[in-house]
Amino acid sequence: MRKWLAIFLVLTLLVGCSSAQPPQVKLPGEQVAQADAINSYNQFGFNLYQKLLKPGENILLSPVSVALALSMAYNGAAGETKAEMADVLLVAGLDPEQLNQSNKLLLQELQASDVTVEIANSLWLRQGVPFLPHFIQLTETYYDAQVSELDFARADAAATINQWVKDNTNGLIEEIIQGPIDPLTIAFLLNAIYFQGDWSAPFAASGTRDDVFNTPAGPVTVPFMHKTATFEYLEEEGLQAIRLPYGKGNMAMYIFLPEDLGEFHKSLTQEQWAKWRSAFTSDRGELALPKFKFEYEERLNEALMDLGMERAFDAFAADFSDMVERGDQAYISEVKHKAFIEVDEKGTEAAAVTSVEITLTSMPAAPSFSMKIDRPFFFMIHDQQTDVILFMGSVYNPSE
Image 1 (tube, rainbow, N blue to C red):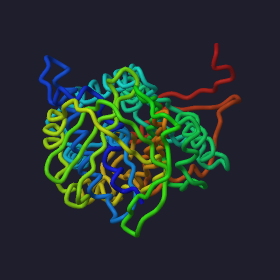
Image 2 (cartoon, rainbow, N blue to C red):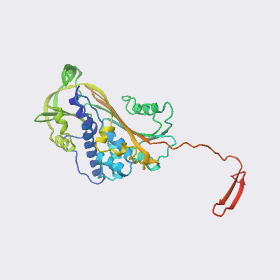
Image 3 (cartoon, rainbow, N blue to C red):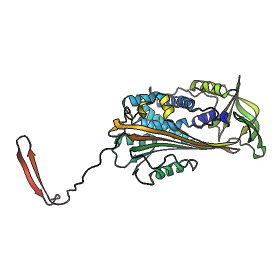
């Protein structure tokens, strides 16, 4: 139901600039790298969206959330695993340092918007597992991630992580991790996004009235909001589209209404999106938009593997040796995505969470004994080849 609305959600959470400018703007220095990264993330979003489509079912995806979560994991990948992840994220042409810097700028710029955009990252590490300091530093420096060591065996471990999710989505998403946590799981990399934007020109509640919406399964009656105004509008054969700005107008929702949604999906690319954006013009018209509210949840493993990210999910081929000691035995066991959106007369509230779960094929053997040298002791230094004792002695006070 309401599946024709699904496509603009990808665009809403990623793109909010004026319709007068195409997204591929060439800028000097690091801004070029940032533009390239954003274009890549957009196209990655379109690619992932295509893999997740199910006929007649609503879909809600935050490509930037998935991309940022995977980018944190990408910093810990090595070899062919890293290469495959770069290909799927479409960032193979970017130096990892450039990508991290671009992501840092993206986080800063999105959160400086005149509407509410809150983005949080976190890294939850199993207590006692030797993660590499460089990986943790990258996550903190470029993704402003909260890094926490946690005893995953605790009964409340999943609840602790889920509380972070709830706090950083304004309560719209209450959990992403299900307990008890697998004994072989060593880390969760999480991204959370919360969006709240009031329409630049709200719909009058008095204009809302029930009407028929035609779903693939048949007609249903839902409340429609109405407005007559000047809009940024696009019309071509088989397609109408409209831009609805939030706040001061930089952030906006784009709605595409094709005659055949299935055929429309086939045309979704970053290149086509750029063409559409540049073709919007101001025009006066009447708009009837249904109010809607729904949640979405999906495991992304299969979709990402279909896109070519296979090694990262293979327990015997994955390589995360830039993340953790014994990284050649670590792999991504699950990528999970949850999202929520509500659209009404006032505006839009939306949230998304992406979780990347890192698991070992086997945990190191536990120590069979414990020895604490906390009282006087004897020692010797012995040469095995000659069997000679070079030194011997006793220690009663190691501080003297």
